[in-house]
Every structure is written in structure tokens, then in C-alpha cells.
Image 1 (cartoon, rainbow, N blue to C red):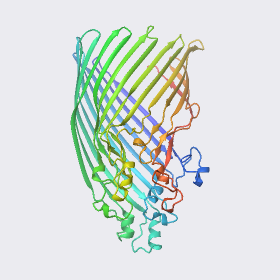
Image 2: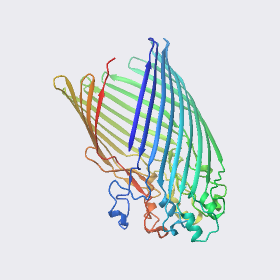
Image 3: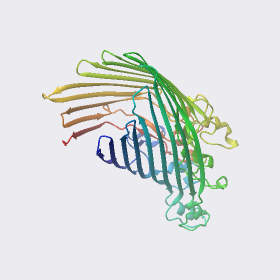
Length: 568
């Protein structure tokens, strides 16, 4: 991976009441391949199991990806006396071009691709996204027990993407071996989907804080929002139509379908805090959260999708969009400080009631990963942290969090809908009340220690060691659809910095002990024929399936960083 990053900021403050900063950020990444390995992800019966290394994949095609990010932001503040007016404007652009090995996904779908001995497939994906945001807020500056904030927010997203799937020489095989009376497809374009979407959101918000006493204050907040989603997509099967339906060899027919969605609502916030003693403060927060809905980047299914007898990856109208999800959050906590702030102890209990949670699902046609809405979920737990200063040279901290996140209602058809012959498998693909949510570790822990000491008379040396640890993580809701529990792991980081007034030099070592761990998966074990309802490693007579693999933790990384502050 090669990454080039640049940033420049210009500040203009012509007087004591006006201040502005214009910032431009640029990043370009050229990634040679996804961090996916097939090490320890293939059955012992698979001949590749003995030759795949920890940082190697068994794909037939390389999977490079290039992406470019640009962000232009302007923040302006004006002191109006009674209040401060703040404007924050942002404009970002994102472009990506990548490639994926698609061979095993197509072979396992039982559309006779496996009859071509040299069959292989890859997908080229292009994505473009532009986002504009604008926020205005007015923050009171008057003295007294009452303070307030009012403001407005606007968000506009325009995105478009395409996916081209190629099956080299399959047209030649079908015409010459099967004797199909059709036209060759020189570009080998087997599948082509395009999608465009526009999302706009508007919001008004306000907050009032009143100090009932010098130790007790109460805050009330309200946010009203409204958003619109418009999605436009199409899908074509060029190779199938050219070879089997005698369409022109270079023809592409895109019949666009459109879907729209909108929603509006209000979010409430309540907070109160009380200073029991000089060293102990307690607080209670009840708030509502919101995450905007959107469109899945999968082409819309054609009207005759149920009559097609060829492989297709597409989204039904119900799968093209996903709705907003909302939360009601409760947090009760205590913050303490002792020995002149040399020892801090904080603890909190939390409960999150999650409505229409956005979770991972799959399309009916092609089992393409998408975002879908479950009916309900919850997350509850506790957090603890401690920070202490030992003597004149040592600072240390430790944190622990316990989280229990699960569905609170059944989620039918979470991973697809199946015909009557497969109803016995439906429980395997439905989400169930009490299923643990994916991507969340139940236990998380961190510990760090910093040693500071003057060296070489007037230089400062800081040595930092930190470790973070987590328990296992599920890859799918309740481990359904052949989900996997990824083992927990701990990672240590170490850095040392020598600094003067104008400069600093830092030596850092991330993943100090070179921990090897899986962070997520691509597909699941069912894709190599080892799932709950697969009895053989050879679906469709194919000996090897490589569509399933693990993303891995970045190995030990050693670097040197130098900073210099130029005088003005």
C-alpha cells in the first residue's frame, strides 16, 4: 500500500471578533490487494491449505484498489457580544477504482460455469461520491444561569457507481463446445450494474442549559430532521444476451428503475449533573440518536428476474433501500478526582434501545451483502476508567468496558427468502430474538503507561507503552448463515519521543509483538461447502472454493516521525 497525504491550512483573523480557517486535505492510496488471507481458512482436505502463508491469498486475480480523497473545509466564527456565531462548511470528493476475484462466487451458484475447465471471473468496481455539508450555530455568551445553542444543518450526498463482471473466454466455450447459436462477446462482460443515489438531510437544533444551583445544572435539547433518498439503478447481462439471445456483440441495455424514500422526526436530549463534593460529580443523560437511511449499491433486478435461468446479482425493490435507525440512550455515571487530580476514577452504566437497526443482510439473487433493517435491538453494559500520576515521572491509565448487544425481536428473511422446498432452512437464515449482534466485542480492555524524564540537560524524553485487548466478535447476527466467532486478541504499541521547544523525533512500534489475528471475514465457511447445510467440500463438482477468507490485523510496523515548528 502506497499512501500520499497532504494538508494545508490558512487562518485569517483580521480583528479580535472575527476568525476563520480554510483547510484543504488530500489523500491518494494505491493498494495492491485486500488484506485477506486464506491461511487457516480452508479445510484440511483442501490441497492449498499446506502452501498458503499467513499473509497470502489463493485468489486467481489480484485485487488492487486505488482511491482518492479530497476535503475542503471553511470554519468561521464571529463574536457578536451576546453570542458567538459559528459557520462550518465542508465539501468532500471520493473516487475509487478496484477489482475483485469473482470466480468462486459464480461457480457455487450452479449455472454450469464449472463445465468450462478454465473458467474464471473478476469484477471491476468504480465509485464516486461528493458530499456537501453546512452548519450554522449561535452559542450564547451572556452571564447568568441560562445558556443556549441554536443552529441548523444541511447535508447533500451525490454518489454513483458501477460494477462490471468479466468471464474471459466463456462465450467461446459456450458457442464452440455447447453449440450455442449466438454471438461472441469479445469484451467478456458477463454482468454490468450501475447505480446513482442522492441523499439530502436538513435539521434544526437547539439546547438550553440552566444552573439550578452552583452545583446542579439541567440541559434540554431538541433536534428536528428531515431527509430524502432518491436511488436510480439498472443491471444488464451482456454476455448471456449476446451468446444465448443473439444480441449484438457489443450491446449494453440498461433499463433504469427508480426508488425514493423520505423520513422526518425529532430527537430529544436531557442531561443533568450534580457536583456532590469537590472530587465527585454524578450525571444522568437520556437522549435519542439517529442514523440516516440510504441506498444499497446493488443494481435493481429486471422485471423478469424470476424467469431468468442464468446467474444474476441484483436487488429487489425492497432490498435497494434501507431505512433510518434510531436509538434511545440512557447513561448514568460518576466522575471522581482525588489527591489534587493525581487519581481519577470514572464509571458509567448505559442502555441503548435500538429501533430498526441497520445490520448486514444479503440479497435474494446472488447473496450480495447489503444493509437491511431488523425490527429491534439493544445494547447495555458498563464502562470503567482509572488514570493516575505516580511520582514525578509516571502516568498510567486503564479502561474496561462490557457490552451486551443483541436483537430484541425476530428478524425474518434477514439473509434472504427461499422457496417452499427450502423452508426447513429458513430458521438458519432468519434473525431471532436474543441473537448477538455482529462486530461488537463483549469485553474490551486497555492499559497504558508513560514515563517522562529530562535528558541531555534540557530535552524531554517520553516513553509510552499501551495494550488494547478484546474478546471474540461475531461476523453475522447470532452466527447465522454460517457466521463465525473470531477469537479475541491483544495488541501492544510502544513509542519513544525526544523533544525540544522547536522539534521532536519519535520512534514508534505498532503491534509490538507482531500479533497475528483475524479482524473480519469475506463471505463465510458456507462458501467452501463446509456450512451447516453442506455435506461436502465439492459443491457442483468443484474441488476448491476460495471465496471465503479472513481480513488480518496489520503486522508489526516500525516507523520514525520527525516534527519541526518553524518560528514566525
